[in-house]
Image (cartoon, rainbow, N blue to C red; front, side, top):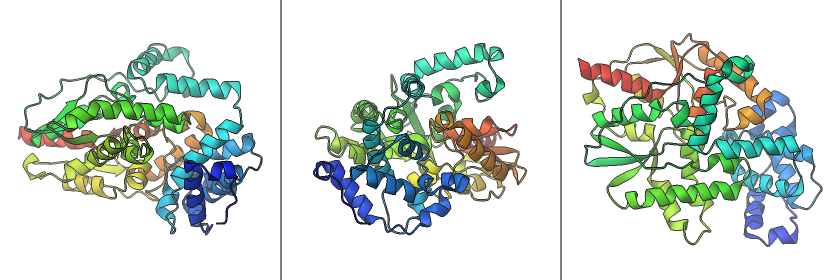
Length: 409
């Protein structure tokens, strides 16, 4: 693709990066077939190729409008297009650059700004989010059902296993997961404990930065990333082997630390090492010998593969093979690589599109009459749970349960 970026942009490092990415696109259109928003809306400007053209025009100094911003906002960042692209276009990075540039040109409406500031003020901070969630639970009877159906009941929290093994891995607590589903990390800790690995929590856990970064507060997101690195670094230099992450959305962000902070002289080297040391919990479990767990899983499960697991982290079929080995029957799921519509704050900011995508995914997941639906990301789990009576849980909870049953016999 030929470009004619403005000299001011082209002379900047970010501009040169954008120019390189734009030139790698051969506008073949393969991405259109796998883009969820193009499939729903049928508008090429709501496809990766269309958004690439919009970003190109913006960086070439052509006028941008609120419509330009809307088409960029509608992108789920599912990265299905990157998996499909034969040219290896780094669309996610170009989208980051384009969104940041357009944000400087177009002032959002007051309500939109308030919602985004509210999300950034509450979601990345566990205590604030827990307070808001508990208030929602307490006064749910006053609010419309559409507002409260995504609020899970208050879970019963059990003790964390004692750190008694020589092998130790840190765990990312996350920001919303400790409030929405604290037993996910607890299940991971118990499972790893039976595999002679201790999962270590750090005091005062931080958000990985994904919430702020994807709401276009990119520097704020990077500051969260730096704080995580500061917390983990001394422990990684000590006894910890790496960082285990049970939310694939967080895992995708941590894996990008090295890329996002590569120009930061103070953090670049550490960010790269932290990214290299991070593992999705599926990678960690798959590398261990599970025979000693006496797994005896039973029941029919549909597995929803989060976009962040397959497209961002490139983990294909690992969870499914673990569940099969554990004895679960996996029901077939059509179009298994499609997005459920959660996508972080997307389900709040683009509610109508998110709801349609969630309904589609549930139809595919429930077509095989599973007893439970499993996933690997808290956002997907919460989003899908709101639309079905079929239990939706993290796969590691199911595996831990069956391993506990096996150890009791």
